[in-house]
Image 1 (cartoon, rainbow, N blue to C red):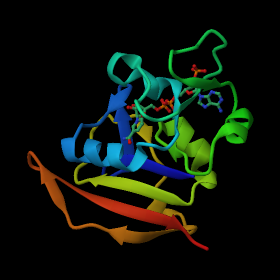
Image 2 (tube, rainbow, N blue to C red; image 1 turned 120 degrees about the horizontal axis):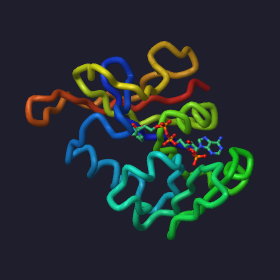
Image 3 (cartoon, protein in one colour; image 1 turned 120 degrees about the vertical axis):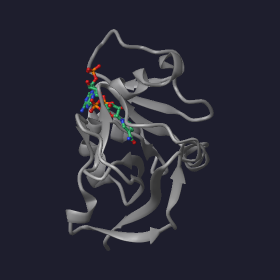
Image 4 (cartoon, rainbow, N blue to C red; image 1 turned 90 degrees about the vertical axis):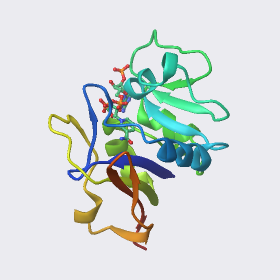
Length: 160
Ligand SMILES: NC(=O)c1ccc[n+]([C@@H]2O[C@H](COP(=O)([O-])OP(=O)(O)OC[C@H]3O[C@@H](n4cnc5c(N)ncnc54)[C@H](OP(=O)(O)O)[C@@H]3O)[C@@H](O)[C@H]2O)c1
């Protein structure tokens, strides 16, 4: 599996239940990388999508322990084991914090958008891959900018 996430300078990924920011170029890249692949997400991340609806043109594998939770167009899994039994190898883990933490060890590639500032009050975090010996930077794209916010795409790979 692979994962994709946008992190700030402290590896924060969210605040108050939402993303830290929305960068159009980053959203396009997210669409390009994940379209045609199953996406794996938590119930709270699904709630942040427009209308709380699953992403189009992708199987949406959603984790929730709530037996009554059955959003149209998504496949809901009540635990990690049943999800992992159904998730194809080409799936993308797309968040949030609890799902990244649970499935990091199942991933071999991490597409990280590094945002060049820190968000005070952020309350959802991704593990700092720069401090995990099993991960290394495979590719680092040139820096970009959106409305004064520097960002850059960094691809991490699990060491062999
Ligand atoms: N920057 C990024 O790239 C990025 C990407 C995605 C999300 N985010 C941010 O991350 C934050 C949300 O993260 P989060 O950790 O609070 O929520 P989350 O991971 O999106 O969803 C958590 C929910 O998923 C379900 N769940 C998680 N693990 C489960 C398991 N093992 N078995 C069954 N169900 C499980 C539970 O749903 P029930 O409560 O229904 O049981 C749990 O409450 C938001 O701020 C969001 O904007 C950021």
